[in-house]
Image (tube, rainbow, N blue to C red; front, top):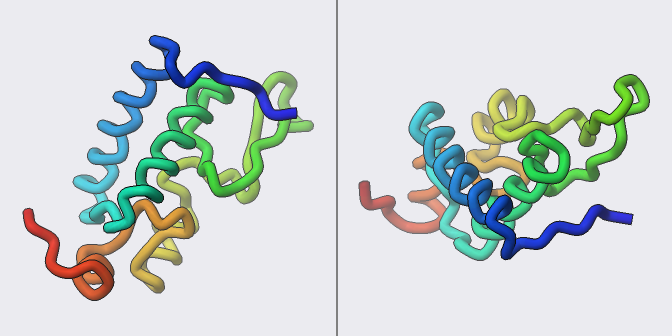
Length: 119
């Protein structure tokens, strides 16, 4: 059973704000942009904030999070995907232009699939 979280709680709202800033910092540091699908962006950012509150890390919300059998009280996700994940950095964005979650993409991908990106 998945842990429950009150998304109206002050704790979650504070983490959501931190996660939104985190996502912008990732874009700035990597030279990426957010994809043009605002519904997907919102869902992924909510998922990242939720995982941070529940599990202590911004695990990719597109992959299952499970108890880590190696470490009591700790969690892990498939491929240990913690945002921004290694597959996105090393393979997905360089090769496909967009990460698996479709949150981050290259400016070139954005321009090709979404139109021009106003800076």
